[in-house]
Length: 250
Image 1 (tube, one colour):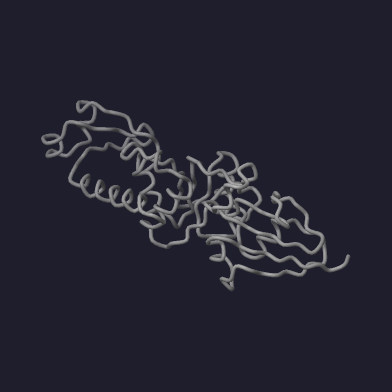
Image 2: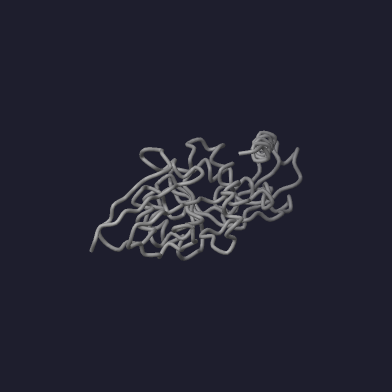
């Protein structure tokens, strides 16, 4: 087969994934190749791609390249997406997630805000992929190769290494501002909390807690009891700070 050239133009923040950090790349190919494989060979996971234009026309990941081609690649949030509303490759409003083992602090923040996040400190990559495939969750990770797995349909590569900034990233990426329900989910096991009568949890409370607090919630999964103790104000301030950051322009 005659060799051919593919020019790729990565828009928005997608050059973040490129070794050169420059938005334009050229690849010379000697065989028919899917546009997905060409894009991921440049280092950009398919979960970060929301629109592909091949010579100006929208295309899916399965499109085969076999001749000189110009490929424009856009991530979620690009202004260009408004011109091709029927050709988006990502689902914006996902409400269920699974996080890899390195993101424990992010998981705590998201659960604090009421977001459904599956998390297991011992989970290996294979297990994470199974959860994504079988439970329809989006994968949160800083492992780009894991996001390139064919079974991972939805996911997000966290740009920051700081939990607070990561939390804001996820809320923005998946448009979660209107889905926040703070203090409704167990921080330990992710199950939703239920109201609990004081008399039914007395045996699990310390003496001062029995005296000063009357409203409690219990996790129906692990049984953990929650109340608005001294730590509550600190958690409220963190939620307020996250919401304030979310309200500012990215």
